[in-house]
Image (cartoon, rainbow, N blue to C red; front, side, top):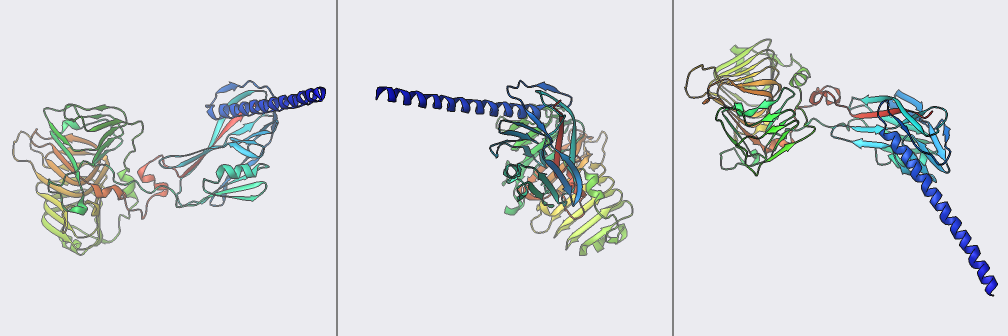
Length: 492
């Protein structure tokens, strides 16, 4: 009995040891394949990397990746494959026993989804890797239907990798199809900032004698000073300075002040205001692109002599400059005005009872005693949009004079992201402002900018998406709906 027991224990012990050794070797192989996959994904253009291999790798042609946009084939190549002891690498996918243990990189960022699928070239693999190039396919049409198809012996694992991205289906044992339906591209950005600066140089808001920024909610009534909020943001992709200027004052009832490069806060910011530096600050919609998307000849032609026809609402356009002086216009219905030139307002009041859109291809000149407001509640900013491709002159130039500043009050969203706002007088805005730069051109008594941000704008699109350029290019020149990146990796 002792001999039989000893023999049994010895036999089981050897089997258990072999099992442990097999598991250790499997784990070692898995980690080695994961290391190879990581090195492939981290290679930059022209980079080389040597990976120490303990097992031999079989180099094969691999599955085929096909990308089609609206039925037109945009890419069709084999991905290459590495195989060792039951482990497979193919296009960023690592498969063990038929299951995906590592998946291709799929990153969804602010405006797009990027899918990275490395392609292996070369006939053998001895541990050396080199990234020799990159194929990138951008889909810039948000209405396009995009299909990614993988033909592979490991189709079930590919389906597992993509089942949470797009409309994935396992066609058969060797084919996976992922459909990205058109119309899923990001919508135009909303008006989420009280002041959003454009792509021009660093902005020095301290040059303004007085900057006042706060917020209110027009759904609760007109702004009256007692219903002030703190949900306003100032945003600039470039340097933002608050410290310059000659003795100016500043009242910032803001939630955040954000700059993409650097912030000089100055003495006017209080400790409870959040000042942020961000690596990437979104740039406002290029105004010229928005205006270019509109029909310049839509509706009836209009001039200074027949402005009263505007009061009935509708679409109108000019074939040159337009001046509105000493008039009060009550717009009873939805109104769209396209000014193919400069728009000058002086001693003028415009009251909009419904939606109002104004497109100006030239400059917007605001003289003394100018008011734009909405009927009933005068500060419903979401109903008025003003787009200006040229510059904005706020107030009249008064060199050496110390007269009272011009009275300019505008309700609405003023968008001039590629322009300069020249401050000759006080400019009070109930809504929001997208501007390239601001300069005070008057004396210290005439450089006041007051922005009351209407919190109802946070959900309003920057522009009406009726004739927007493809892929919403009007709010970013680098925008895309989908991007496929295929790094070319030489394994020889």
